[in-house]
Image (cartoon, rainbow, N blue to C red; front, top):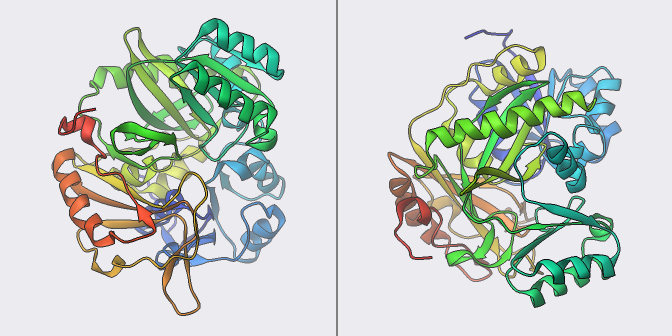
Length: 429
């Protein structure tokens, strides 16, 4: 493996579980001297030095990077990417890992992504784009349910309604387009066909037309057991996906990820960073549900622990246009999200989390946590943390995680009890 000069100082931008996983993995690097995280959270403070600068304060972040001689800044969340943080850092002559504003449209505009896929014949669901309520309503009535409604812009992973009935679809339409449930993000809607099949996630490091896939994972979007309840940002995930054949993953890279990277180059917005593909294995083959322009959450928390390669080296190689060496562990990793009661709707913040000190055979990735004045770790978001464990199989990892999750049973929080069920066919859906 190539080795750069050791002693790197790296800044990770973000405050969630994905950023915690990135910080932890960077700490394993022989190249890294120090990891900073801005603004971070109570758990990330154990793995990085926190910097009290908001992720949307581009000037403040760049000033800090210059003052501290930061060799690389890694951007975690979608909002700063969509707003052009990479462009800003590059204009300041600072090394940064992530797509520029134009390339980040792959996530920040669902209609951009769908039109790209249509133009370059990348498999996806049929769709139409609407800004007018009556036109959208007529389309839904004509096509019937089930049907999928997506806010065009960023909505923190909650801007999608999978409507199983016509009534549900029309109610979601009214909420999004008329009541502006997601603000500007839902002033335009993508309405698309409902795909049936096995859903899975595939991330890849991308530099221009070059695509370096990671291992597959499967997320659980619905809030409650048995895939019931509203869509969330993700209630748990696992990797690998044993019931997903290797040739399907290869086909997904060949027919979706690689054509996407090439299409972005042809459209004048070459992509550098991580492309996340939310995919569906249908009877017609793999189809694209969505693209994200960064590491997925919670998939990152179960994929990065399986990476044997030095993550800092991978970042540097991708940025330099070199082929990174990606080596993966055979073991399975499964993670379960502890969420605030009421999520993804309204919920209380500042609730103390008991039992964290008792978790021994698993890794805790903090997402929405804060340390109180008395020193207690408290909730500060809907998805509070994720507990991940590894094992020889998905079933072994699942058993270990749920042994640990019991230690976190307490009022004010909830978690799904069936993460990984599809892989081990233990529960009936």
